[in-house]
Image (tube, rainbow, N blue to C red):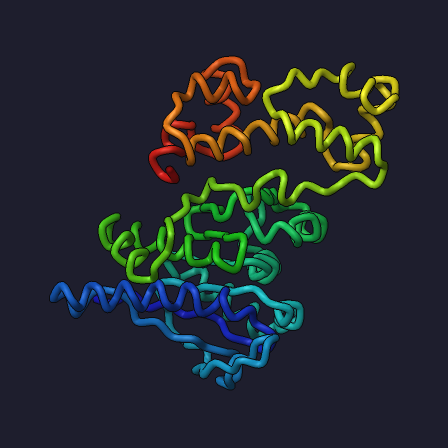
Length: 320
């Protein structure tokens, strides 16, 4: 029988958080019907607390039903500016808690994690959300171990969390794969003309793009030097000399300005450089490890597993 999927709509919802997963589940149902499996797939509905249309921040209005009273298979909570009002809505929180007791899974996308956490469904769990809101989620819910890096993760046996926007599509594809196998998930990805289907361990952003730029010119110059030559030695003493500071003072200032210690920053830049080379070249992992400053393939492998969640050879097979 078809699995019921309810996507929560509300004023101020982020359109793609809602529509992206909706399209994935409905495309999977159409694909199964095309294979003669008309009774399989998903019964997907968008539901709002009062049954009124879900209006997005950009003016789009999406038709919605009332929240169902009975059990559903999957509940998906998208993000959006309106999530703050829902956090104070006792009826919505009670509905979510009741649904979580009978549903096979509860899924949050982007700031939808705040509502799921408000309902107590993330207590003691590891979770992710959009990187811009990760610190706030961790501050408001200290019982949740917030990881801002993955695009999505399984936070518990029944709860999944995603970074937001397009990451909701990636998570929905993974849920389809869990329900119906890899072949169907790949068929849906091709139908939606997705360049690739990213695993949950894929980082939300690449280092040179997202890393904050230091306000002090000497620290910015050090950042640029590291990014220009990831495979360089980049010892603290040499970086401090470049910034005309003592090593101890340089480490303190760099960490304050950039948000992470110099060694961690170097490692992040090297990982990004290696990631690009795995995608764009046929060079061996050993050669890339040496070129990007890791020294050995094993060092690079450990770094990839820690930062990206998968080893280099797996990454290459997935993204090259």
